[in-house]
Image 1 (cartoon, helix red, strand yellow):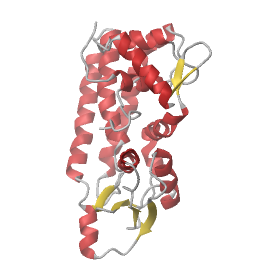
Image 2 (spheres, rainbow, N blue to C red; image 1 turned 30 degrees about the vertical axis):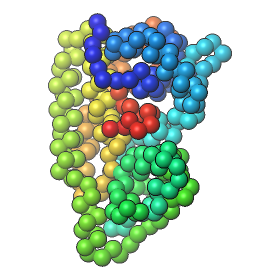
Image 3 (cartoon, helix red, strand yellow; image 1 turned 120 degrees about the vertical axis):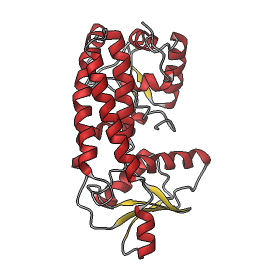
Image 4 (cartoon, helix red, strand yellow; image 1 turned 180 degrees about the vertical axis):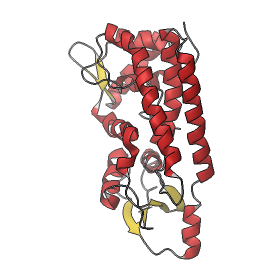
Length: 282
C-alpha cells in the first residue's frame, strides 16, 4: 500500500543505501521500496544517475549501488547518534570559534554553513561562529571534522577564552535551550506512540512509518548542538537517544524481510535522515 510522504527520490536513495552493512543494493529493491512512498521508478533512476555523477553513490560490476566516498563524511557523522556521550568532554567554559567561514563561492559558502550547522555552531557576529568547547578532541578534532564536512580551507578554527561578560551571555543565548528540550520530549513521545502502532501494522505500513518517525528523530540528533550541561540538561537528550535505539531495532525488524529478500545486509533501520542531501538536513 502506498503511503504519501514528503521525501525526495534523491534523499530516499541515499538514506536507504546508508543502511547497508556491506555490499550493494539492486535497482529493483530501490524501486520497490520507493514505491511505498509514491516515488516513481523514473524518479529513482534519475536520482541514481545524478548521484553517481556527483560521487555520492557508486555502481559495482553487477550494476548494484552503494554509497560513494563523497557521502562518507556525513554518513559517519550521522551514525554517531548511538553514543553521543562518547563525543563529549567536561566544559571548561572555553569556546571554539570559526572566522571567515563564508569566504569563497556561493556553493562553498553553503557547504561551510552546513558543516557548521552539523557541528552545532551559531553566528555570534557576521564573521564569527561559535560553540562551546566541550567536544572530545577539542579544537583539533573539530577543525578536521569541519574540513571533512565541507568547510573551505579559508576558515580559521580556534579556541576562544575569557570573553567579556556581555559577550559570554550573548553567546550562551545563541541556542534556544527550551526549544531543544521540548524537541527531545516531542520526539520521545512520537517514538513511544509509533512503537504501539507498529504492532498492528502490516510490514509495508510499518516500513513507511518507521522511516518517517525515526527519520524525524534522527534529524534532531544529527543536528543537535551537543551543548554542555550548564546550557541544556543532558538527561533530556540521553532519553531521546535511548528511545531511538529501541525504535531503530524495531524498525530494522520490520524492514528485515524486505531487505533479506533482495539479499541486502543492513546495519540499521532505513530512516528519513535527509542528512546526505546537501542543504536538506532540517
